[in-house]
Image: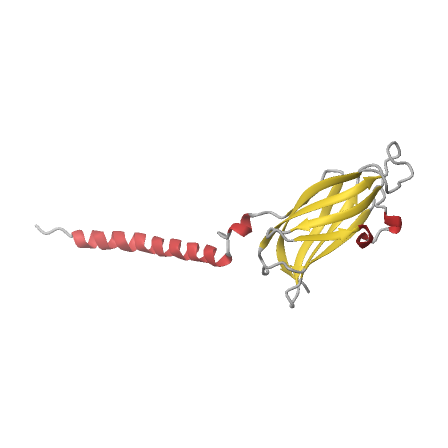
Length: 173
């Protein structure tokens, strides 16, 4: 007696074939959106130290290919500080420096509880929109704590803190 094995095999292939087609379409859609891109999984951050916080950072590039890093430094140390310099090192080991006069501070002092915006032009940086950049920040400052430097004079020892900024390159409007 003849059995109908061919029909069972075809039904099996058709049922699971459609499931495989659907699975391939879902994987293709995920790949197209960039969900498996490693930079998609990296979270952005801006850290210096807990009481001298770094907030609101943005790394942008304009149509000419000029990169600008912009972020805020908030002084929560409990005393004033006098920034001396700021060094920014990009992932390709280019170092960019700002001096005290570049901070746009009244009398060169960042008061306790105050915030300043730092803007650094990264002239030699290479990248494109959507890239993730890891940047090291080093801030040198003089403490104006009343018990250490009550007159906030600039011949006191210089303190150095380091931090990190991880940012995605954005298109500048």
